[in-house]
Image (tube, rainbow, N blue to C red; front, side, top):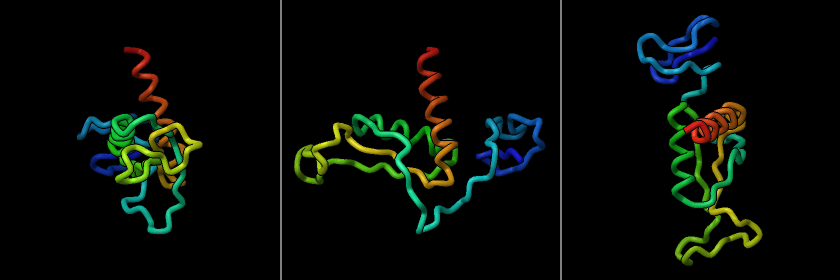
Length: 115
């Protein structure tokens, strides 16, 4: 059953938007708490910290739990911990959110192309 990410109200299948919050409905309820033993997966690699925070906010706005991981070694002026990776870092989500996170990021990138 679709639900509103804002007020957590469940709706019948034919609804696409919450009538109270005017939020687009998500296909299924995302757990409120990320389990401590969540199986985290990289959903997107980012070229810099700003891009990471933008995508992190896009996912969080959809109610998806996100972890932004830098590939840089702290206090070493941008030196990468893994010289084989050219990206600044990775956006990780729990396995149960991986598919919806991919769809959300794709929709976000598609909306940028349209503008």
